[in-house]
Amino acid sequence: MSVSESYLHTDDLHPIDIVETLAAHHDWDFDRVTDDQIAMAVEGQWRTYSITLAWSPYDETLRLICTFEMDPPEERVPALYDTLNRTNDMVWSGAFTYWREQRMMVWRYGLSLAGGQIAGAEQIDRMITEAVTSAERFYPAFQLVCWGNDSPERALEMAMGQAFGRA
Image 1 (spheres, one colour):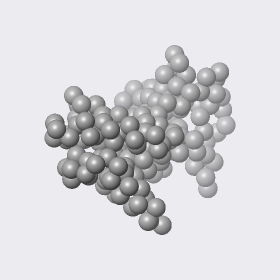
Image 2 (cartoon, rainbow, N blue to C red):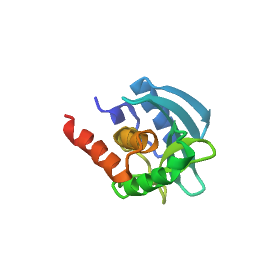
Image 3 (tube, helix red, strand yellow):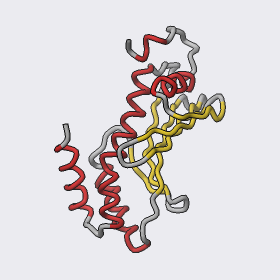
């Protein structure tokens, strides 16, 4: 049974209700922070990722933020920023940024549902999957640049080689 088959087709289904059902379906730890926001923990190969989805009725956007801690040595921060720029050229459905004060790597994506559009369960599940997949894909490159003293080019080549080498 697909994830969406468990939903009634209705125009007043709140996007965060869908996320909550997905989190329960996948057995992820989650907390419904407010009516318009949910936080969850999703286990990856490299680490556990904190994911927050928030619905903004004002601009009709479902925002996803996936974070993990990263505290690189100060002298490696410029190389990390270079790596982030190169990484963002390689991804299509979101973008990485580094929140220096919070020492957090962040994957962000906003799904515009303007005009009263409704997000489907598969669409939201895909957003979450893409966030974790992207974090997993590039995590080794960020580590190599920050602590392995590799160049951004070399670190991304290695990360891409690992991604292409797995089935």
